[in-house]
Image (cartoon, rainbow, N blue to C red; front, side, top):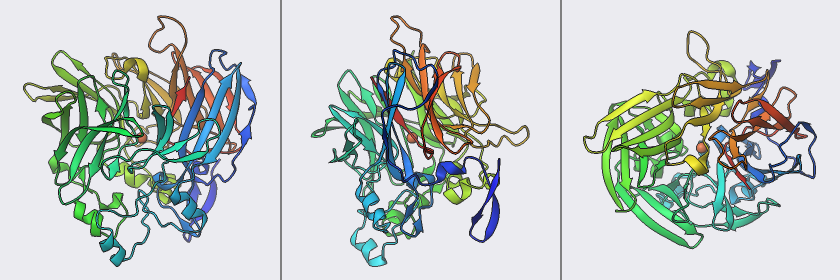
Amino acid sequence: METTMDVSTETVVRPPYAKGFETLETEVELDSLPVEGQIPEWLTGTLLRNGPAKFEAGDRKLKHWFDGYAMLHRFSFGGGHVSYANRFLQSKAYRAALNGKASYGEFATDPCRSIFKRAATLFRPQITDNCNVNLTRLGDEYIAMTETPLPIAFDPDTLETLGYSFKAPGIHATAHPHHDPARGELVAYVTHFGLRSEYRVFAQRDRATQRRIAAKHVAEPSYMHSFALTERYAVLVAFPFVVNPLDLAIGRRSFIENYRWKPERGTQLLVFDREAGSLRGVYEAEPCFAFHHVNAFEQGGELVIDMAAYEDAGVIGALYIDTVRVSEERKVRPARLLRYRVNLESGRVSEEALSDVPIELPQIDYRQCNGRPYRYVYGTGGTTSDNSEQAEFIDRLVKVDVEDGVTCEWREPGAFPGEPVFVPSPTPDRGEDDGVLLSVVLDARGTSFLLVLDAASLGELGRARVPHHIPLGFHGQYFS
Ligand SMILES: [Fe+2]
């Protein structure tokens, strides 16, 4: 079901998932969505999701999937029924866009600062607050996050924007903080750009309580999207996709377009001892790139770190909207599960592919398994053609057993699923994959539905249809 669209002056093939990169203006609040199949009765919480939903600012089009203005979505469960609401996050960047101005620098869309304004805002550009990547709970507060230092608090029921939460101690933040249940904190890192640039690992207990854990000077910081946390260590995997901070300050490019792929540098694993507040060591590995860590744990003197890894950072360029809408040009080798084993004494790092299947937006039974040995990874996947190993767009959900590499999948023709969120069943002494997966799926009708799968088999239990399309999003969480 391919139709055509005009990009610039050329007529190109429009892939069936192109709707996922189109603006959704509609905001609704619905008590009950039509359900097919059975939603488990024990599912009584709320799935909150975040992602881009507006791709223009006046006449100006945003350039990259990661640039779109944030919309929050709420799916609430009870008695086998599903209610739904969606609402734009009222960031300053979004409100400026409503007024026709792209006056904030997004990930890959530049605000067109004058050279004088660039000089005046050296190292402190008008950074976006478009928190479109992820969300979590910090103490009693729900926050939406992107890779800039100002998360925005929101009401989890009404999705009303409540204002800024804490400020991360740097400029390029992660939207993937970890929870440390033992200390009751979020743990995160931020890159500070300046005359002396640093990676800073810190903990946030609530809006007002922040503490520094450790820091490391870096001349050319790496673009990192997430990190690993074990009981004792925080691990930054610094890929050789790096930036000269001066280029960020005075360059004419958008944020990410200042980064350069320098494979000769290899990948550096920076292992911070969280208790000592110091760098335990820097370990060298082959060049690669990843957005998402999967899990990490300590095992017999080794540190095990699992990621969804690409061969290089080309995937970022493949996700420009004018590229991703044109399937033939979007080809990159997909991410696969990569395991590092780091011997902290000898410094030896070994690398092992855990599976051959493409995987992105990886999820685990986070509460039970993060920082511990584990078995199952869930994620989005794609087809791989026989000869090129180039993936088509995300068209399935996959599950990988990291112990034996066995995989299973869910897919349906014309359906494009998002990140699968694992929700454990309330069964006592349950198995690691005893629960359900929740995923928002765009389908060939041009609308979206919430899919509920049995996490053990990836068999469908039910689905709840939304009356509009939900643009392809990034991350979310289930709150019981
Ligand atoms: Fe992410």
